[in-house]
Structure formats: C-alpha cells, structure tokens
Length: 148
Image 1: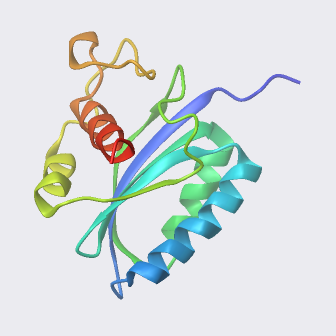
Image 2: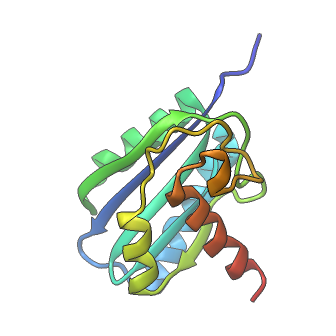
Image 3: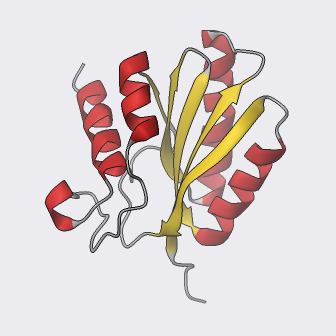
C-alpha cells in the first residue's frame, strides 16, 4: 500500500475563551499524542489569544485533524491561509512545536503571503526558490526559538 502524499495546511484563529499557558500546554500535549498516531508534524504559534497553526503530513490525516479543530468551539474566526500539497516535511521532528511569539511577529505571519506558487517547499526553503514568504518566516521563528 502506498503512503498518501504529504500535505500542508496553515490556519489562523482566535481562541475563545483565551487559554491560559497551562491550558495551552495541555492542548499541545494532547495534540502531540494524536499527531504521533496520525503521522502529523507542525507547529502552533500564539500571541494574545490568537493562533497560527501549521500542519503537515498525509493529506487524509491533515484534513481529519483540521476538521476536528474547525469543530472545536474554542476556535473562532478560523481562516485557512494555505491548503496544498507538500513535497517534503518542513518540521519533521516537531510532533507539535509550540511557540509563543510577539504580537508583531504574529502580525507579520498573519499578513504574509502563504499562497505564493512554490517550486519547492521543503526544509531548505528560501524566498528565492518561490516558497511562500509566510513559510519562510515561520521557519525563521522556529529556528530562532530552538536556539534559545
């Protein structure tokens, strides 16, 4: 049986009510457990009650995970920034990374172009190769967070 092609989905939402840090940690812990079983990797970024989540993995698993998120009453005003095929994982080691970012970093990600046509969206993606600027910026935030 062949494996499903990789897929990525990025969405933005507001959490209502705004979750405390321990509640966010519990949410991320539960997500990591489910993601391990589903073969999903990615990262959740948050600032002041707003979230951006990047999901990658087999397309059926990504769609099922997003469906569960979309039905979660804690999420309000969900906007899908990008929903597309992915040639290689960008965050292969992150079952669900969890980063708190500044409001200005969040706004930069929120306003970034996520839909730019990309010849390559893999781990070494750069703006020069056509990778969406949102994904390049997300990788930059994740790399800086890892080095702290």
